[in-house]
Image (cartoon, one colour):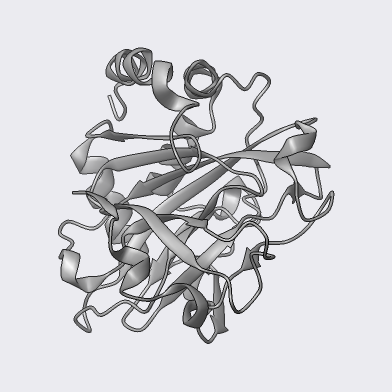
Length: 263
């Protein structure tokens, strides 16, 4: 068995009571659900990189590589097994139990999802996600991320970070805005992170990675959609791409002064 649905459901039954009340936005994480041999095979397929890549380089904003899957036929075998689990109906039914969001739909086109690879100096600035799957005309509601690295030194940066801005009288994109990193979650191997995504869910890993030359931060990502969404989900228009905050605005010692750290 490559995934333990029973343990996942039991964990969700415990965590769902507090999911919606989490600050700064709803999230939960789950450790150890996938079979270790599957993750080893996935890491080997990423090493071989027999799939198309999409390299993104915008200084202080987004410096990373991701897969460019077009459909299920372009996905390597073990990675495909992973997505068959987290894009399947049984998994999504449990995610609905966690989040309270009915009618979740996975993405057969992998638009924005798939493999993410970030090396030394790479970054993913604080941002809110794009709102829409345009090919299917659906609203993006949930992110699921599985971390893959066998070991991650906290000194390397690269935590999943959850952020909020402090001065509500200023636009979040104002260069004078003050930001606070509320929480940092270590990208621990076999850790599955699920969170609600909307125009309130500021996240990323601000600042560059500082890793050895042979280390890259690896994760697998899937997004889930619905046909409609609450009006209060959106603050920046009905449909937009990911909106980033430059690292030069967010990153400071003060921003991390009272950050919760989950190892």
